Image 1 (tube, rainbow, N blue to C red):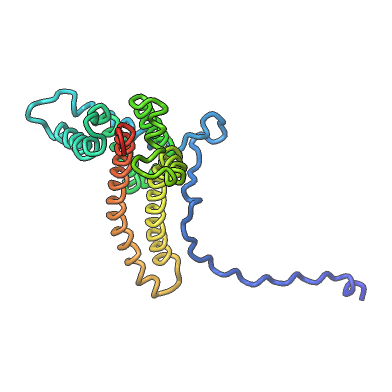
Image 2 (cartoon, rainbow, N blue to C red):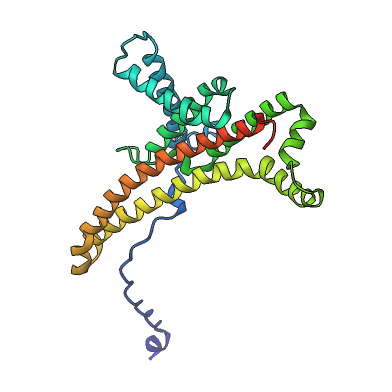
Amino acid sequence: MISSLTQVPAPPVPPPMPAEGFKAPGVEDFNLPPIFEGIPVLEWFDKVSIQFIVAALFVWAFFALATKDPKVVPGRLQFLAEKFQGIVRDQIARDNIGPEFRKYVPYLVALFAFILVNNVFGILPFVQFPSFSHPGMAYALAAITWLIYNYVGIKKQGFGGYVRLMTWPPGVPAWVRVILTPIEFLSNFILRPVTLSLRLFGNMLAGHLLLLVFIFGGEYMLTVADDLILNVLSPFAFLFAIVMTFFEAFIQVVQAYIFTVLTASYIGASLADEH
């Protein structure tokens, strides 16, 4: 009797947990752990930092080797370097900057090559991570561009003349200038570097995220999902991943080109007498 009164009832059996479904990749998948975790000075050093360093060394080594022993009849490496430099010089610098384009060609060539190599990391086997899916370096490159086009503009026009050029549209009534001047100031001095960096960062982030969705989704459909229809459809997810890889390669080249073209156009606008 006593034992029956003091007996503790058994806890209820919890219901079975449902099988874990597919978790779509998100922004958190881009937060890579530091290589030297726990060391405050080196906690910033991660895979992305290594990629930026490798990209800079690769660009330097490529052009150094290509121009080490130049010949009248170029070899393959020299031909590639000259072709790349020619595209930037003739189709970007000359068309967007004008008569003073030559002094800016080296920076534009290095800029285009550096961005392109880092973008291609996103589809390179065993790397497969676009460096500019982290916004920090995109902001840094945009800041360098901002410093250059403002510096050359002030150097040529003088501070007052340059500010007037960039904020005081010529050929419009005075009452319209009251509206346009604040807009021009925001556009030329504040929004340009922001949009320049966010365009590159946003495209690299979105493209890589889309690839992750197709790849991990296909893996889930093939190996985890207990559904015959999903198992049968899984090859299509991998096929779309392959198609998107080629499309992403195209976007990577285009974004490097656009960043360089806009940099050249900003420099050209700063050097122009009137725009």
